[in-house]
Image (cartoon, rainbow, N blue to C red; front, side):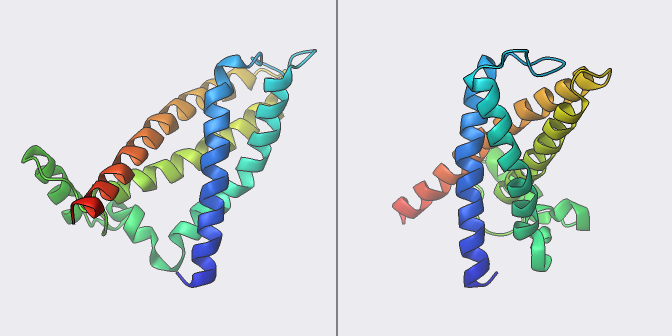
Length: 171
């Protein structure tokens, strides 16, 4: 990825990180079920607005991260390349931290977070478009489940980044 691509990815990452923190942190305060409430509150409006920003950013961020063959880094399992992932997992059982580079465990966690982010955004749009209809609660359920999985992936991502920074400090 060139310098321009890296700058774009950094900006997208910042938007995704801040907006995801807001959306996840405020989601328990929402009053939406099958449709937007008759009198939506601040958190309902903000979730809709921030969510609408995240949809195109999350999808474009996914494509920014995987272009130029970089999909092999985040999704090595698609190409059947499981060696680095297996080595990292085996190393964990021996008390060794995985390396940050390559298509190992840390990269796979990032890849799953990218997919979960895009899927959560898309199901949020599905929920919004289906509001008041028979499918709205199914979209909401899918959105909530994916948001929970995304939250776990984000926590794992933060832990792996922290471990990577710990390696820098040790060296």
